[in-house]
Image: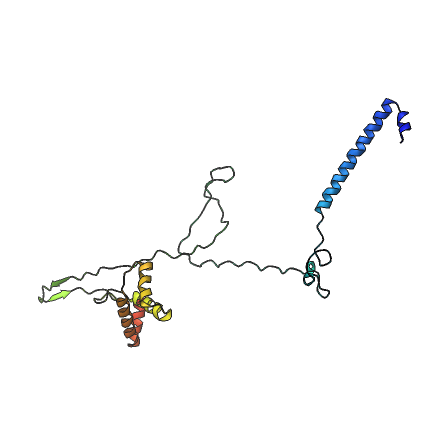
Length: 226
């Protein structure tokens, strides 16, 4: 429409024409915005030696499939530790209140949802047993009678068969020297034992192991190895 045609129109016709043009402009602006949004979502083409500074060695080889065509391997199913057959302790954790509305919940009626094992080493310390031997005069014959100490706690060395067996195991199988053994006993069991005492303990263990089969079995039973 030219200028002369516009001048021939009266005021109501000009207003109608202006309203229609404004509506057309709004429609074109909305369409333009949609096109820009779609253009922004389009992925950029992969970089190749032809359209970027990628070196030729990184380009797609003619005898190799496209990177996107290779199928991914399915991941393996996760494996968890098998539950112990006879756990030493069981701890039941039941909900006391609803985490959403804080409503109090009764322990009865709650079902087991999940269970797992928590494994740890209990606190260990050296155990010292004071052996007291009493004596008296027999009223029948007048001779002196003394109490008998428990097996494995006879007078002599203060260290028991378990300590002897453990020291021999660490020294001979793991090549731990006397000095490190002494520090190990102190740090783990809070037991003060000198290098000389460890050497004597290992010597006694070697003597017992060199003896008869009966002596060896008795030593192992005292250490509760068998």
